[in-house]
Length: 290
Image (cartoon, rainbow, N blue to C red; front, top):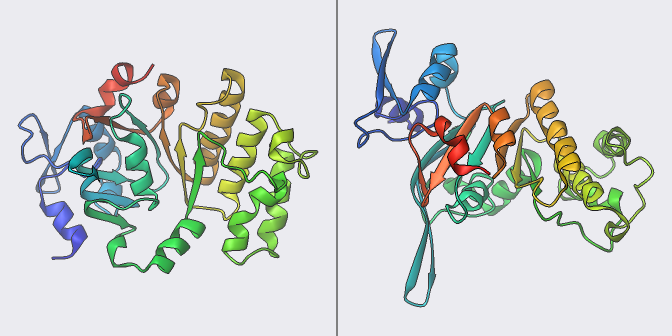
């Protein structure tokens, strides 16, 4: 059976992707003669507003994902049987206590890491069947990344740092180079193109990192605590830039955060605890954010 037909035929929450076979509190809902189940009111209401969307193919689908690390004889489990849907155009916030596996989950979604067990689908394609070259191409053309640590190369200036994705994509002389240059002006960095990272403030470095993430015009942006090292004013400016991209350009946005204000603005919330997805995850914003 095709993966997406199998996804719909199983007892899973079509919105968030959670398997519900062992969840007796699942909410049933009939639609066009078929019964579907949801982990809570939040996912049910989202389905009611746009059933056609959630009967389609998710942008990203994690199916039974496990992640563990082994050191000698010691195995450390990070993620345990995680099933998640990310829908195109959504702003998704991943929350949970420290050590719950948020960053690991984000890295697996972004194909920066591989699951120990389970599969990751991108637009319906099983990424485990892809070559390293195909995976790298997907990361460099479809995905953009913004991390808490700015990860700028110290011997390159701001403009050179921002255009690295274009060089890897062999598009270093196209329109996107000029578009990237224009983004510096849009983000108040027009006079900073030739400055090196040590000559930039933390907020300026993070804005350069965001420009770099946008260089290839990605369909989805992953942010791992992107405002974590910034003061509140600068952090809010960066967050507003990300949300504006989501609202005006339909960029899918997936952000790991401890910030309740960020979680409040998201369309979807993924809540992790002890490496597993928490049911009815929309109601846990106050519990797992600060």
